[in-house]
View (cartoon, rainbow, N blue to C red):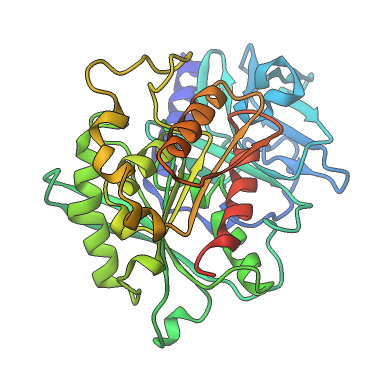
Length: 386
């Protein structure tokens, strides 16, 4: 009974964290402080040689397991057992790990919970994760440069008849109230939410560092919630066109012309970028597709082929419009060689080439992971608004 009450308290802490805004510690790579034998002695300890130690004081627990999908490249499918000592302290050390952000939960006797000793969290569509960051990356570390702001914005979606949330990045100096900026719509993947790009995706720091190095133009970045009833149904597209874009472009000092507007996304968000960007090509000069394509264009392990008229047949008027193609300054694709969606990406790129488009396509190492998506954002952003 005492074990059930302990798990209930941990779950309650998870609910509280889910309802809270992202804390500054979720962003920076502050070293964790070890508090042995404390009831919450679990904050990951990250050493200078990039080893990470997880701890949990749970004397009544029978098993504690780390669940971290971002560690898939380190064996055991991202799942590792912690070891218990005589005092009831559970511990596990991994590494060296690549620089980057990692999401995880601790599975205590079969119940997944957030790490009670780690205040840094990241949200998904249906749950919350604990978060840690391993420093050592020039492009996404927290550096001594001017920093922009990330706001959580609530708006009412008339098309969905509900309150919705987006995150918005504004560059350093925006708050001074001078001038207009290009606008970049950046979409997340399936299972994630509008928090993902700025927590595990490190997008705010990537933009800060690129702007400080004069590798990218200062820009306003809109990071909306992409889930509605179905990942690629018309509901999100209507929300985007009817509510998200009008709200963003009326509430922020941005240009309203095609040349200063970009859209990109990862996985589901990459598909959504195509479903929005191509049918409304007159509105976007830059389109980026990360680990995605036209889902269903070829049979794959995740998406069945679409019945009825193909996506290509439905959009021939745009695909064969030479004038619209001429205004598309960048059409950029990248997918990992180990990603099951690589064939979808290649087939999509080939289809656009047949219609006279000139997409850029690169295959990166690795698979369907945040390691790639952060790299793609760092490669794609400097190409915008040049």
